Image 1 (spheres, rainbow, N blue to C red):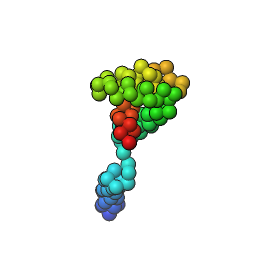
Image 2: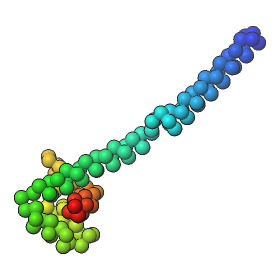
Image 3: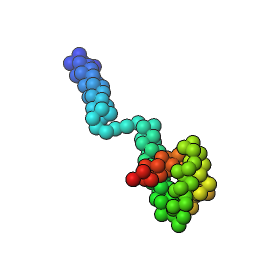
Image 4: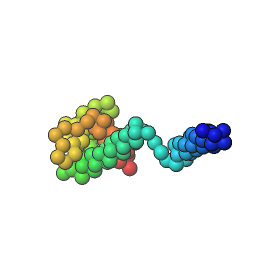
Amino acid sequence: MKQETAAKVKFGVWGLVLGATAAIIVGFNWGGWVTGGTAKGKTDEALLASRAAICVAQFMKGPNRDRDLKAFEEADSWKRSELIEKGGWDKMPGQAEASGAVAEACARGIEVAAAK
C-alpha cells in the first residue's frame, strides 16, 4: 500500500471512530436515546401509575363507596394497602392476583382523592 493511501485510510478510520463517538454522545445526551434498563424502568413506572389510577377509580365508583371510604380512613396508614387487597380493587380485569405495589400506590391515590 502506498504511503498516501495508508494515510487516507488512517484518517478515514479516525474520522469514523470520532464521528461514531460524537453521534453516541449527542444521541444519549440530547437525542432521547436510553438504555434498555432505563426504558424498562420507565415502562414499569407508567404501568404502575395507570393500574393505580384504575384501582382508585374502581374504589371511588364502588356501590359501597361511603362505607369503604370510612373504613379506609379509619385504618392505620400501613394497613390501608391490605384493605385495598382484601376489597379486590387492586386487581385488573382478567387478572388472578395483583401486586402489592399496585395496592400501595392505590392507597396513596385514594388518600389524595379523599382529601379533595
